[in-house]
Structure formats: structure tokens, C-alpha cells
Image (cartoon, rainbow, N blue to C red):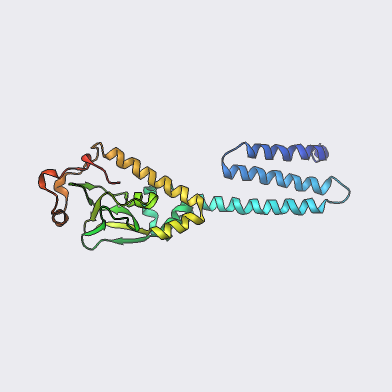
Length: 252
């Protein structure tokens, strides 16, 4: 029975079955595991099919297997929670579309800090050169003749980053806000080197944009009375009758 299982014909069919099953599955980790199993069976086949091992085929199969192991290790590391940096573990779930490995890469490029005094981070009509993620605190925005408050857990400057258009709103952070900051150039270089990272980052930003559209309907609106006085004074050009809650607009 065991000898029959090791017959060349049986081994070829078994290896082929592993390859076919792997190529029929979209999960990259399972796919690579099945291909690796098929490669292992082919190694046994090349070792036993003739009186002498087929060394060229064995060497090539071993190289294929090693390359597969390298890719599999990278995939597992990218999706492992162990890749999440301890310093930013508290905000990982604020980036739902980022695998742990891509989150780690994104955090390596970020500067995380607390705002010590009210500060402007974008200007309407300015192209900008930085992307922000507001971890905590309120963001006051002015768009045209309207002012409104945005809650935390949002990106600021994402449209300028994605498509290079000037900011359509001016935004201020209140004292005490905690924020992540990236330079556009750093992110674009990383995206150019790693298309998978680029796709993951764009997916995370798209979720943020969708949530802003949802908030524009008025849900989760923040009362204007909660806008810090110094920040309101910074918007002295906005007439009182035209100040509104987030339900009237959303930052882009």
C-alpha cells in the first residue's frame, strides 16, 4: 500500500492536485501552503522516479520552494498582530483596512504629537504638503463662508494627497489634540516602492471619506457651542449667522 502511494504516477497526480487546489483558492497564505505541498511531492517524485535522482529538477524545485517560503513568511508577518508597534497599538483599530504589517510601515513614517496651542494645519486653496490623522480632540473647519466642527478619528488633507487638488477648507486643531502627521513626499515614495502598501493606504482613506459623507447628513453633528473660543476668533471672517454644525457640510 505504501509503495503504491509512492509510485511515480500517484506522486504526479498528487502534486498536480495540490497545485490545482492552490491556484483555485484566492487566499494567498492557503495558496502558497498548497503549492509548497505540491513542490514537496515533486521533490519526492524526482528523487524516486529513476534509478538516480533527477538533480537538476530537484535543485530547481528546491529554489521554487525556498522562494515560496520567503513569500509565505512575508505574508504571515504582514498579517500578524505581532507586527503592530507597541507605541501605536492603541490606535490600530482606527485603521480598519490596514493589515498589521502595512500599519507598522505607515507608523514608521508618521510623527505623533500633542498640539500645545491652537494651530492651523490646512488653508483653503493651498495644495498642502502634509497628511494628518486626528486621534483625539476637535477640528474646526472653514469652507467658504461656513464653519463647522469635525470629530476625531479622521484624516485631514487626504484629497490633496490622493489627487493633488488644493484643500477646499481651512482647518484648525484645538489645544490638546493628539495627531499623526505624514509628509506627502514620504508617503508617495513608499507607495511607489510598494503597490500593496499603496492599495492598503488608499483603502483606509476611502473608509474615512465614506464616513465623512455619512456625517454630512447630520448624524453625529457637534454643536457649534463646543467650538473653542480661540478657534472661533481665528475665523473672524465668518459671520455669525452663517456658522453651522457639521450637518451642513463635510471637509474634503
